[in-house]
Image (spheres, rainbow, N blue to C red):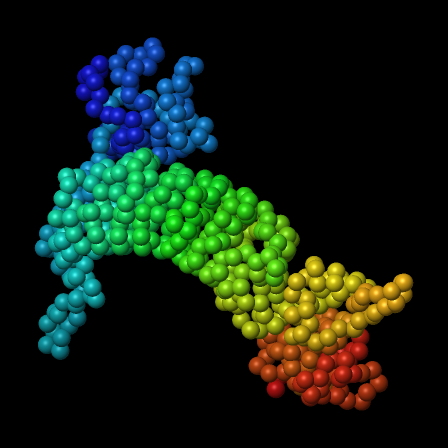
Length: 544
């Protein structure tokens, strides 16, 4: 358009900006590169002629300023953390995108002709005739792509979609859509998105991630998207209050994704009204640093899965039988790549009684441990967890982890009061019940007679354990040195040795200095102490 004429663009409009030509070796244009942006300003610029359009680029790698030029601020950007996400351009470099139906037709109808639709797979019959093979679902998919009113799942990620088109067009042309991905498009208005509520009553999944949305109208009352069960709002720069308003108006919402929105607080006016039906809540890559913010969700009756990876959490609240954490339905909790710095944070998770799956990889308290050590250390502290960091917890892993953890506790706790040990290691008494009692000393004295100062005596046995193919073999197949609780039962020792030496069954023999032959240990419920095993003894293991 000619300079000086009034622009048809308005702030918040979403546009495509021509950036550069791609030319061949002869200098002929092959393509024009377009980038997405949002209009922030329309008007004059000091020292320049005509009308200029101030834009904020979707990509933070572009831009020359933040809306302030020559000491004058013309507009502000949403991406306040980016140093220079904005530019001024002429309107001739801009174009708008299309409607939903136009973009669907561009992708799903295209220029397919019958030759392109022909199946190129075939088999030969006994008469050497070619028989076309119809792949499972292929015929149906091709019909859906060419007959719009049969489309049920539409994926327009990265398209040039700007608006929904005339009222009634979507419901007339594509009435059966149930899954709709509109991420990384040119959508710029929640009001425009909400129009789909009436147009697509069968919609169950909607993804509008990575769009620069104007959220005006999101707080309006009245139910929308009656059948929507999953809503994805990742990287939309949407605040939590807006999320709460939107969620409260979607009656059957069960899965909500709001990752990457720089959310720091999870407080809202009525958490159960807004999120009472949500079963899975994705909050990854936000700015949540205080566990008290997470606790505002503790009363949600249906919340089964909560994803908090890559936030800024430094500590989890300390709970007890008297001070329980809530989250009664929670089964899955992802905490990877937070700044949690203490094993007490893991101990606190035990009070989430329904918790079955946890992820804590990349947390600060694991920095000095290798992958195996960190995994076993977490397993030992969370007896009800069946999946850790994406992998199932096996029975052998749990036994090895718990025996190793109990051994660590006993090693560091000689001479300490039992109450002190229990305070530091909440699983201590449970582990004792599973793997045997301990030697205790009771201190006497004081005006009141016997004081309750039960301390832990030396209870670990340092043993050399050799795996041999047969008794009498001079060279063991494998050999380890290990400290084990003196009251570990033989059956539990066998389970541990099967894991350590990777044998299907374990026969255990005790070799004392001066004995002609090693003695087989056979009473499975007896402890090592009862079987006569002492510090410094050697054990031989053969596969049974």
